[in-house]
Image (cartoon, rainbow, N blue to C red; front, top):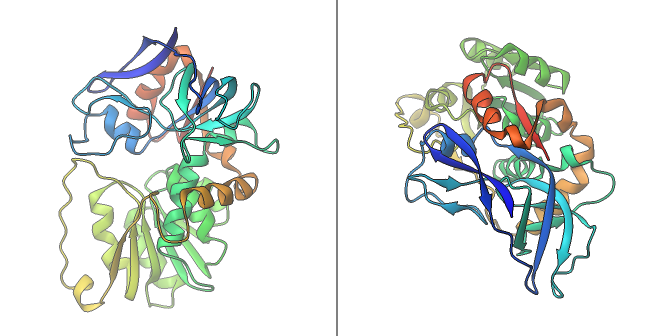
Length: 326
């Protein structure tokens, strides 16, 4: 018997008992050590802002009408392994599984990933969100010397900016929370500004042209609207945000039409040549240099998990990443 986090109603999380079966041939049983609360899609589910047609991640249970067991980034060690799983007892792994102290899962294609010794447990919990940020940079690559803007400096936005920094001639990040802007500046952004100052900062650092690539990672509809005025003629707007059932209303004239801008939808699904396995391999190589532990605001014991969601929900100005320790 184990314990797992369930969202039993809107903005209400509980720890409930869960059965743990013995692993089949292609399965492993994992005892968790750390897991990461996603302030993006996972919190939309917690707030009841998703719909019946949204996709469920591997190993989720229930439905979006509540109750639902939902999550997708957990680190632990293998306690039992099926004969065809490819794992042995003691292996340290990342699993796409909801928050649960002991669980059995099929290894799948990317459901379970072996972890190298050079990545600590806390850093390894970021593997999935780093994969999202990397995919955005593959969907809308920043060419050498271009001007890039990242709107929203939550965890995914911070990681997206760190990838874009590698090629951008100028990098501007936008967020209303000063502490998040400070973290981005320390990680190498050329400018970190509040939303009301974004247009002037972009014009200054782009010699009046606007951004070549703008990433929208805030989850706020008004931020998507602002990308049209920030992005240059023939520029690209990459949308990482998942808005769920939150309505998004856009005024497309005149900037979007006259500037011939491109809008790209980005998610961590399969894309040509960059399979999930290849992106995972790339992230494991890049993760030690991403300084992801700079993004951790709080460690909370697993048996106090409901308070973690209350904290992220009520105080986004105080927290970025919250890790549950088992």
